[in-house]
Image (cartoon, rainbow, N blue to C red; front, side):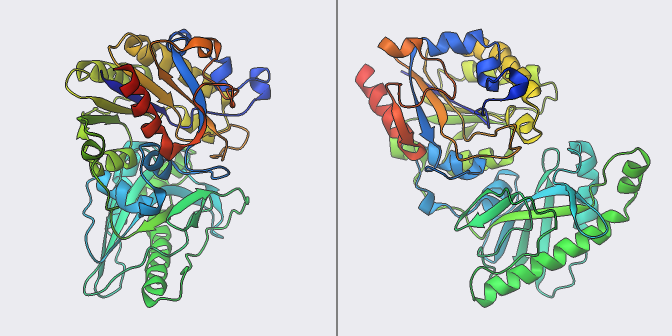
Length: 418
C-alpha cells in the first residue's frame, strides 16, 4: 500500500462576498476532488496549534510529524533548499524584494510580484554590495519571483538567531514567525531579542545590509527601467526568519520505515524534504500553472511504484490569497482539480489532502484557522457525504487535531487497512 500526501498551500480560506458568501474551496468547480472526498474520512487540523497563524515552513515541518521545538528557523532551511551552504558561523534569512519610498515606508512587500528573470538580474546587484564589516561576508540568491535567501558568514565568530524581522508581514516568536496584521508600513529596524553580544552584532549586520541594499538597488539600471515602464521598483530587501543551523531530526524514512520522495515548487519545502531525507523528484520550472500541475501529477503517478510515501506541495492557492483575489483563488483551485486531481484520483495509493495554513483573501495574510484534511479509506461510512472544505469542523471521523499528530494518525489507519 502506498501513500500520496498532498498539501494545498494556503488553500483554506474564509467566506467571501465576491463568491456569494462561500469560500474558494466551496465555490470552485472541483468534481475530481469531490470524487476523491467521497471515498475519504475527514477532519480538521491546526497546522501547529490553535490560534497560531504559521508560515508554510513551520507548518509543513509540523504536519510531517516533527516537533516545532526542534525547529531552527526558516532562513536556514530555505537557504539549504536553494543550494546555499549552512555552516558554523553563519546566519541565514528568507528575503523578499520589496518597494519602499524615500521615507523607508513599504509600498509593496513583493515589489509588484517581480518576475524571476528581473530578480535574477538584481541578484547580481545585491551580491556586489560592499558590506564594509571586517570578517563578515554574505551570499544572496534570488529563487522564484520576489523571493530570495541570504546567508551571512562570520570569520572567527558567531551570529545569533535571536533577532527580529526586517519585515512588516511576519513577527518573530521564538524559533518561528507568525503573520503580523498591525498595518505598519515602516521598514522595521532589526532588534536583538536577547542581551547577547552575538544578537546585537547580528542585528547591526542586518541593519547595515538592508540600508546598503536600498542605496544600491534604488540607483541600479534595472529599477530605473522598471520605473520608466510604470512598474514598481524592487529597491529593498526584507529579511526575516533568522537561523544559524539546520534542525537535528530523524530522517523520515528511518522514523516510519518507508521509502519516501517529494515533489515541490518552492525552496523552503525542498529544504525541509531534503533535511528529512526524502528523495527529490525533480520538477522543472513551468510558467503555465495548468501544465505545471499536470506535470506534478505525472511525476507522482510515475514514481508511485518506487516509493511508499510521496509528498506533493502545490503552491498555487496561496498567492491569490495574499493578493486578496478570491476569484483568482477559485480559478487556481479549479485548475489544480482538472490538471492534478483529475489524473491522480485513480492512483493505486491512499491519498491524504490538506493545507499548510489558511490564507483568507479578506485578510491577505495567513490566519490561525483550522484547515480541512482527508484520508482515503476502504469504507468512509458517513464521511462520504462530507465535503472537503472549511465547514468540516468536528463532524468528520478524523476529528480535530494538531498537525504534528496527523502522520501518526494516518499511518495507524493505513496499518489497520493492510
